[in-house]
Length: 372
Image 1 (cartoon, rainbow, N blue to C red):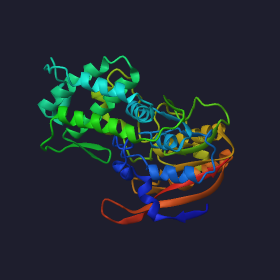
Image 2: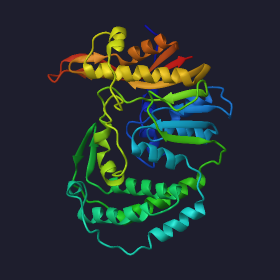
Image 3: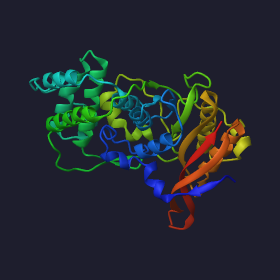
């Protein structure tokens, strides 16, 4: 239906894996993200001015925003998950390195005191000693008055805590993998030291980066104010975000109002009559998902300048024994809104099978490029 190009060498760039070795990008492992390399490729080939604004309405761990900052562009990012907003902010802030180092000395000079209470629901995920250390450092960090400094050390503690846990993230499921773990305080110290050293090497730019809590279906962005969109919405029926990051939420965001994140966007559920007329009869979750996609595309169309492009990374889905062609349906919805679908680039393909190992077809992951 649409111009489709296969470039399987690009497939790894649709994943977070290349970021694992890149300073600052690797401060928090966000397996659902895409790579710095993908954003670099798009931005460096887009003929943008340094005054241009990049938008990512599903900013995740902030890869689009950080790459934009690194290249000297302004950027705006939104998300509904507290861990995503924190991570994106911390990665893209400008810091006083000396101030961070002074707080580091103060933080690790506190004499350890055992916490009065350890939540029972967290005991299986950590050793007793690790959990005691986490609960010791957490209130000390919470008392830091400077929001930027507080968030910096909070993210360092979150990252260290997961590295010292028994948590194994298998797809959308959290599993326990009992193993020897390093002392939390030692890991925390190393993480803070690494993060400060990473900042020293990061290029200085005048980019303005804004990160806010926001629903991609109702963006707080002016009409025709954005020069390019690079994003990846949640995949249909793929990752249960609320579950996969629930330990981080329980430990560090207990005071934050958390929306019900599902495999579609989840802040509210609209009637699906309109979307059903457009795409046909699907599973109720698929209809809700495409309804959300449609609303988000309308917002992207509204905020994009004329002749500007959006790059959207999505993947097909398997519901029951039926393959949902997410790429082409998303392209179709874009076209109905008024976009010109330039092309779809396929980066990954895998065989879909029934529980009895009978081949059903091929699931594809790709990037849709659309122009206003």
